[in-house]
Image 1: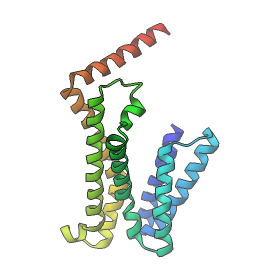
Image 2: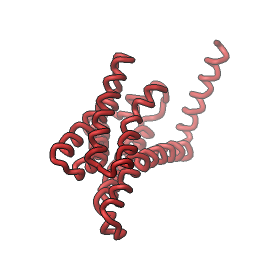
Image 3: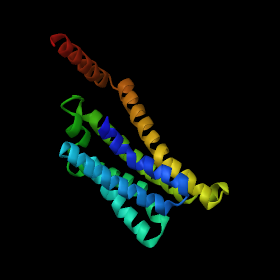
Image 4: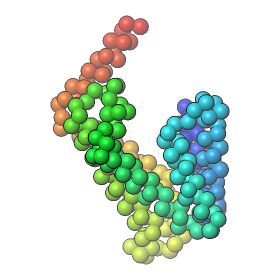
Amino acid sequence: MLAKILDFAPAIAFFISYRLSSDLVLATGVIIACCVLSFILQYILWHKTSRLQVFLTVAVLLFGIPTILLNDPVIIKWKVTVVNLILALALFVCQFVLRRNPFSYLFGKEIPLPDHIWAKLASSFMCYFVVAAGLNVIIAFYLPMLFGIDEKSADSLWVDYKTFGNAILNFVFAMGTIMYLWWRYPEAREAFTQIEQDKLKAKDQQ
């Protein structure tokens, strides 16, 4: 539970600091400090940090430090887009260049799905990350032109999207993809059913 709190604390701190100050550069300084502090605390408490946490911390530093030094909030707005494009590129390289499905590598032992379903999952997420990258560009830079709102209102909407909207979209897409695979492929249903049966057997044996 504490680990999840530490994962989400920087984003919440960014949101609160922006709401209090209406200053994206100041909020960027807050999220940098919180990310570094969260990273250090995780290492102190558990003597390790997740690869995802390392990746996100590095991304915040790469985009956050220039934002502060140049006093230019445009830079931090590109972070969501670049992170999504990196994830899409990583899936493409793993799936089509290295011929090693990342989802199968991470979850294959716990969820024994056929290779073609893992391939569908990787391709779906790859396309989604590209779309999410483009959506962030629209929300970050084109809202005033599209809807005739001022820059401050547009920044506020982008902060809402970065903090909550992007996470909600990720969750909805992931759940929708799982439900589609469940409905479309009987072998996926069989695999998940077998997993649940194995869990019940393990509980009975305890």
